Amino acid sequence: QVRLVESGGGLVQAGGSLRLSCASSGTFSSPKAMGWYRQAPGKLRDLVARIDRCGFANYGDSVKGRFTISGDPAKNTVYLLMDNLKPEDTAVYYCTAEFGLSDTSLYWGQGTQVTVSS
Image (cartoon, rainbow, N blue to C red; front, side):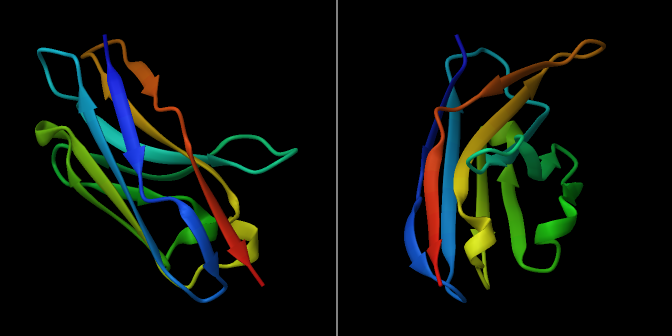
């Protein structure tokens, strides 16, 4: 069974930085991609960033230029460095892992709270 463990959330002032970490375990194979989504109160869950085994990364429009995803899904790890944080970045951040070839299965972590004060 896939297990995703996130760490690194917390409270930070606007303009500050945080780094989230996520490790995947519980499977024989490693993910083909890992990423981060976030969900603020009353809003839909949105993609923050995603990275695949080739190192290709894509970002949500609202975080481009401020957030950086790194890590290696082949090694079951992904990180998210968040710089110049804004109050609107406040949300629960979820780590994700994608498995499968023709059909993709998406797994979710429990989430970690990020709160940015103004």
